[in-house]
Length: 395
Image (tube, rainbow, N blue to C red; front, side, top):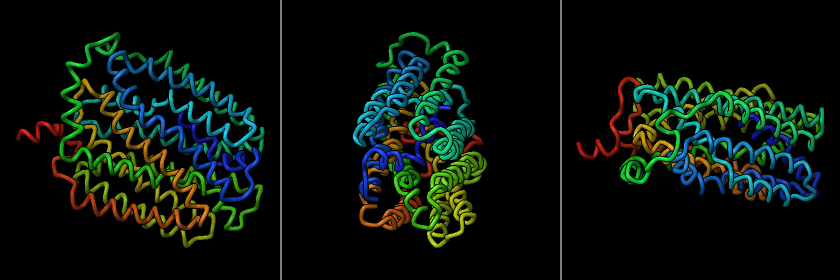
């Protein structure tokens, strides 16, 4: 529900920016990119902090705090009168966000170590189903109730998610109430953060997210350039966003079986290769059907690579530091989510094709880096509990 609400605005945010006074294509893309990027930018800085607070006081309280802020801020966005209002509200939203990483910590907390890839894949699938539904719903809502009223619908999604968490979720017994986190998690924090392999996982997650989220500020403009009728731009853009998200859910699910056969580095590398080929085909296509198909294939590669990277990193985190550890992994993802729309929005002022060229270059570089440097200990296989990095170093 939360990720559906977050992505409802993606197809029409550039159009909303235009309504608020931005005129030329470059200015619209810049404000849309900055607005999409500022929330995860602030969240990336604070995610490890909120993760450590959750390790101490419980995940549920932190998730409820985040969802309440989203209800308020999304409602306030409907009253914006200038592009910078949207940017400022989304900056404030970042101060209270961060529930995505906490849900991954919840999954790791509830799953056996040998089913970590399955648990992470299921949570990431639910996080992807929201973006699969959200953009199409947003494109329809923009035409049915108007862009401003669509923000109220978004707030309602967060309100429903808040009710579900409050009524149906209960923290595990050992997480209820304050705990002495310092003694238990500080050694684990140092061991996984500085160990060989973990920094490379962080780089991989950042790069994958950067490419995955680079389309936000430019895809509606690219669709318009292809000659799509003005009243169908939001719908077609939402269809492409949703195709990529649905493909990514499939990639999340098949990753578990792939990790039973191959090391995580190989799964990530092959996933990036599939995404790169699909993106190249997307750029030479003009048919809406082909565009949708290539975006779906792109999503499959990105989804498999993402789950493999989180599994390789998550398998190294001590249980008592799940909140902080997945906060660090999420911060890397959020950094990509924050920087990508801003950078791509600025680059698009020169040419939209520059953004796609940058994406292809990053996919190639990341695949080569992982094939060359990913340590064998970062396996992430599902058939047996992988050793922690600190255990591997001792061995």
